[in-house]
View 1 (tube, helix red, strand yellow):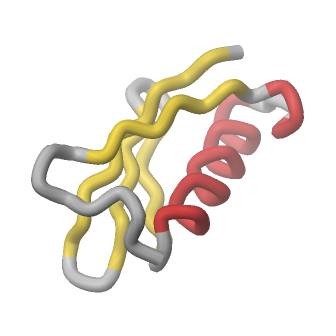
View 2 (cartoon, rainbow, N blue to C red; view 1 turned 30 degrees about the vertical axis):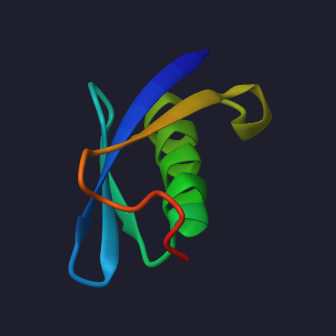
Length: 66
């Protein structure tokens, strides 16, 4: 299934919001993405391999951090 998540830099973390699923965080952009996939898999009872996640980095936050 397809999901879109929005990541916002807050201090040393990327805080990721996945609408209708929840929020998670990671120290790097890659870790934040992995945590978002894990969140979706857990909350939506889906196989992580079948999750299509589009990450959107909020304006003004560097997407290459970490």
